[in-house]
Amino acid sequence: MSEIHDIGRMGALCSEESLLFRENHASFGCLPEEMGSVVKFGFHVSISSSIDKAVERAQKLGCDSFQIFTRNPRSWATKELGEGEPEAFRAKRAEAGIEPVFGHMPYILNLASPERKVYERSVASLRTGLARCETLGIPMLVTHVGSHLGKGSELGVERVVDALDIALGGDDSKVMVLLETGPGSRNSVGSSFEEMGRILNSIVDADRVGICLDTCHVFAAGYELRTAEGFEETVNSFEVEIGLDRLELVHLNDSVGGFRSGRDHHEHLGLGEIGLRGLGLVVNSGFGGVPMIMETPINDTRGNLGNMNVARGLVGMG
Ligand SMILES: [Zn+2]
Ligand SMILES: [Zn+2]
Image (cartoon, rainbow, N blue to C red; front, side, top):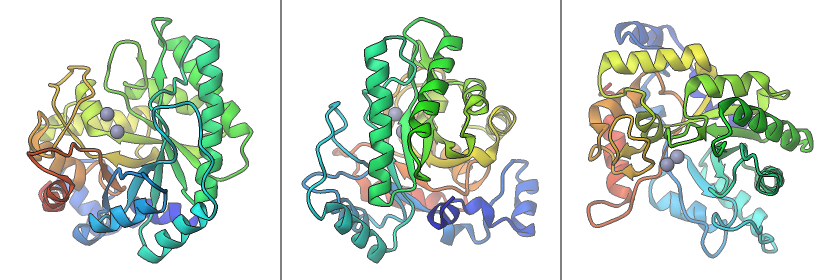
């Protein structure tokens, strides 16, 4: 993978010290040295008016990394990029020194759909998304997996694998697809680590597919994060079913919905059902070592800057 990607994978900074930390915390995964200076935090930021504006928004928030929709998230149509827009984005990002940047596909995609029309549109859309990321110099593209609409997990997994094989087969860039863990809602595919593992093990171009773990989603799907024992079990299960080396990104969100609620409803860090202790475990051990992107609300309670402060305060508290 590209240089940008290598920098994003801070698990590579594995040292004896961090291994010791790992042992002491009875958790898994490789932690970088001087955690405080290397944990990358960022937000999903808006691309409104033009894509390069996202870089300025990320800078204002003190982001080390950020995520954007590469196009309108609520429509199938992809508006052409304006003249000079990709160049402006690339130049501003390089100047700001913020990396990696993650792209995010629209929510309307359903890569597991048994309905032909939606499925074909979703696959085509993913291909377009990969091409756009390549144009913008974005190394990784996050997508939700989708729903089998009652047809069962096995068929859902098959559809997703085929979708990825088609989309990646027709694209010769090095852009990676990151499958986002689901919240355990009815008929969803990819809410269990076991299902994600089956998908990853069946893809032809497996090196180009990784995982984005959303803390709100996995908690809502029934993976414990709040206690050291429960967290260890969750990390262990991820390691067994998927492999920690496949984790490229964490979406660091608290959850409005309770444990195993199946609800996809994000909350400010520390003000939801997961709480600071669980989020601290995520940042400092087990799932740490990859960029942490927040998709938290902006309202009267708190804005993005407030959540950035809380996130930075989590470093070292695991
Ligand atoms: Zn997410
Ligand atoms: Zn979500």
